[in-house]
Length: 413
Ligand code: GLV
Ligand code: MN
Ligand code: MN
Ligand code: MN
Image: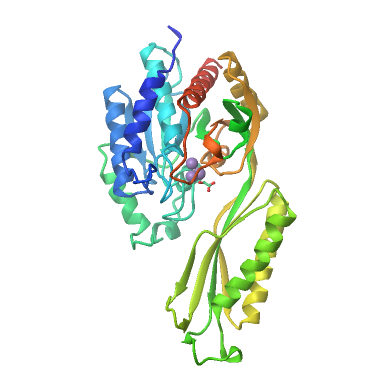
C-alpha cells in the first residue's frame, strides 16, 4: 500500500444531503421505498458517482447493485461493504443511506491515497432491506446469500398493486450496468449503520461494535367473519373478525412485552374489509413483528401469539389463518471480526462499546457467507423509522473512519 488514506467528512455530508433530496418529505425525512422511482433515482446517482471514480458497476437478478474498486488480483474474493438505499414510507435520511455513502467514502479515500491492495473492495447496495412495500425485509441480501429468488416473492403485490417481479425488472433495466448471476464468493462483509436506539448517544460513545442481532419473526394474521348490519345484528348472530382481532391484540399487548423486557411486539399494519362505518367487517388482517435475542424464547412467543389468535377467533366464530412473512433467527458475529472492528476503531483513537442490534440488517444473511461485522453510529434521541432521524456529522465521520480502518485491517490480513 502507498499513502495513508483518510476520509473527507465534508464530502460525506454533501453526499448525504444529495441522497436525502431524493424522496425528501416535507417533514425533513425521506420516502424512497424499495424499487420505486425514487429508489431508481438514488441508484442512478450512485452509478454516476462510481463512473466518475472509475469504479465498475454490476447488478444481479435481485437488483442488488455492486460497485467495485479493483484490487491487483482479480481472482481474490472481494471485501464487501454494504447497506441499503430504500427507506420506510416515512423514513429518515440515514437508515441505510449512511452505510452506503460511508462505504463509498471509504472507496474514494482508498482511491485518493492511491492505495494498492491485492484484494478488490466492493460496495453492495442491497434491494428492499426495509420490507414495508414488499415482504420480507432484507430480501436482496437473502437472495444473494441463498442464491434463490423464490417465485412467491416475485408474485407479491404492493398496496399500490405493483408486482415485485415487474418492479425488479424495471429497476434493473433503468441502469446501464450488466446483470450477473446471484451470489459470488466474498472474503468478508462489513456494514455501517445508525444504531436506531438510544444507547450510544446516552454514553457519548462514537462507535458501537455490534456483537449480534436479535431474532425477528413477521406474521400475517387473517380473520374472516361475516359482514352484517351494524344496527340490526345481535351479538349471538355476529361473526365479527374485529372483535376477535381486538381481543387477541389486547391479550398480547398485556402479556408479551410487560412480562419480558427483552421481547418486542408490534402491530404496524391493519386492514379492515369492507371498512364501512355501519357494517360488521367481513375480514381483518394485521401484521405482527415479534423479536427476541433468544431463538427458543422467540419460538415460545410465536406459540403464544398463535394460541391467543386461535382462542379469540373461536370466541367470535371466525376463521383464522396465520402465515410467516419473515423468519430471521438471532445471530452472533464471530469474535475475531468483533475484535477486528474494535481494534481498528481504537487505532483511530475512537472509543467503542459492544452492543446487540435490536434491528435486523442485511448483515444477518451475509454472516452465512463470510466473516461479518457491523459498526453502529449514535443517532439523536435514539429515533429511527421516523422522519426526525438524525446523525451528528462528527459521529458520521467517526463511524466512517472506523469503517475505513476496519477495511484496511481486512486488506492487510
Ligand atoms: C429493519 O428495518 C428492521 O425492521 O429491523
Ligand atoms: Mn436499515
Ligand atoms: Mn430501517
Ligand atoms: Mn433495517
